Image 1: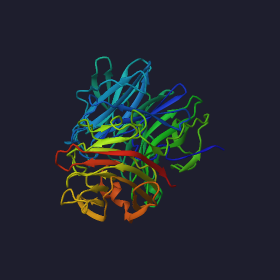
Image 2 (image 1 turned 180 degrees about the horizontal axis):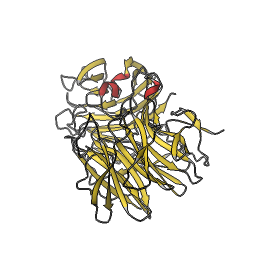
Image 3 (image 1 turned 30 degrees about the vertical axis):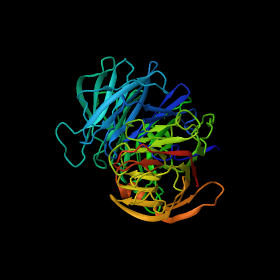
Image 4 (image 1 turned 90 degrees about the vertical axis):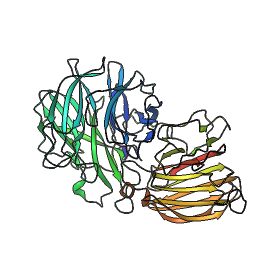
Length: 526
């Protein structure tokens, strides 16, 4: 029997939404304060995915300037109708105001249109549904019109939308308020028509340990909707905090071309206790239908790390190389910036075969766009390394290698000249951990060379850091077994996962200096 391993998208890929178009499958996930926004993937077999790019890859589509951690782009939905792909999502600003919009494309690889912003569309997690009669409907969540009866009590609402004018039309209708006896924070609605029934699938219970997926149905799109007596149809909250997969929720149903049903959802893997460094990841599980209701992973009712594979021809894509030598004229789609890039601070052309980062005054500890290029941590145990050429010219200038959760929680492995300025005796390599907004130097050694290579190895929550001048030398340990829980959302808060990347800063001063990175490598050790 063919099997596959969960998660199908490891690392920080939350809130999956997926569709089938013929024999092709497309999937998008949330991206929060990272740019480009909304990564989009393609698969032939539901298990093997290749990233096509990002839906929101231009500043005209996505301005994340000074967006605070875990704000930005939440819970996109992808849909397809009559030759057009639609992606609808919420931009959450620093005041927690929600701005809903959609973009379109005829090719999911792009390019996608500029946003169509929707007026009078409260709440988060919008979705689109194309009915058989040609009408199109918007679903989302909102505070109930009659007010909240308990904390985080939300209402799932429906309204017709005219996609030609970009306007919501007709009345807003409350269609469901979830499985009230077991849930709160009703959100993430997706509407389907299967047979004679309309189904609304939602997430509730919050995004933490009590997260869950529930479902209701009606013969009329306007309702009334009847909740499934077996709700929640998927959750792990009853399995305890020691179970290796936790906070399961935010589902999406997809039917294959052979009539089989599958559910995508988010969940997290834990390490070193209840710590979730990777954030929320994308999982896949089978679905069967009984008496008009979906049964998730029949006979087991939970997500598994290994499951029987879909009845589809296995279509693996060429694996991404472990090492990025920066030889192409464009960045691999695995790379992200922190917020929308401001200024001309990076280049693959100034020094061919290298990534050049020009030092910016912005710091990693601020809610700004620093000179940072980073990719997701995707394994509980991993090895990452990079080669850099950099000569600090002032005491303000630093560059190096970072493991990042947010501005107040990260590791920085940096080369700098020290407080006394340009002096060969004070140049140093320093490992700093930032926890709860406070810096602590874990290790520092003199370093006067222009070339350096960094390495980080993590085994669970033990993170170790190494350095050398070049590949002819053996690695020297700088600091062993640092506590990696600083990179967990359970320590740092928020909704994102850990990143690993390359960084350069002049720490508030102006600078004409730069750092060149010859290569970066990342591999899982699981």
